[in-house]
Amino acid sequence: MIGKFKKSISHAGEVIKEQAAALGDAAKQKGYDIIGDWISILPKLKSYGFEVSFFSLSVSINPTLEVELVGEAEKFDMEYIEKLLEESKGSTPLNLVFTSIKTTHQFHQRAELETLNPLCVRIRVRLSPEIRVSYGEPICE
Image (cartoon, rainbow, N blue to C red; front, top):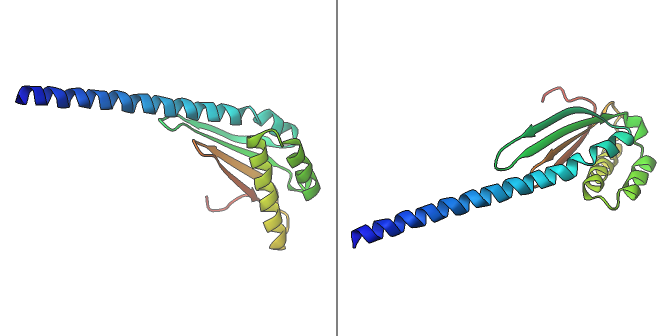
């Protein structure tokens, strides 16, 4: 009886390991699919006036893409940002980038701060993306 019980527990443990590995592989593949969507917008962002200054890929169960883009802050005034938002309606990644730029621009103007160069956009893509927009270069990073 104890032998059957041990065998059942061992079998259950193997099944759990297989399921965990399958879930990990599925999550990893989903992460790569999401990263692929974001990589595909980089040429478009370049055509709008950004240059890639940093590109990194971390490989794990939750792969992570980090891209930093820089552009001339003066070029990205509210009129240009609104135009880019209109053009990006069919692309969720592009729309997220330009919405983040617009929001940062509005708060920056509300703070009555001088426009600093460069305009920097840092995108961190995991199963959930993170977009950070800043004016100027951070001193403490």
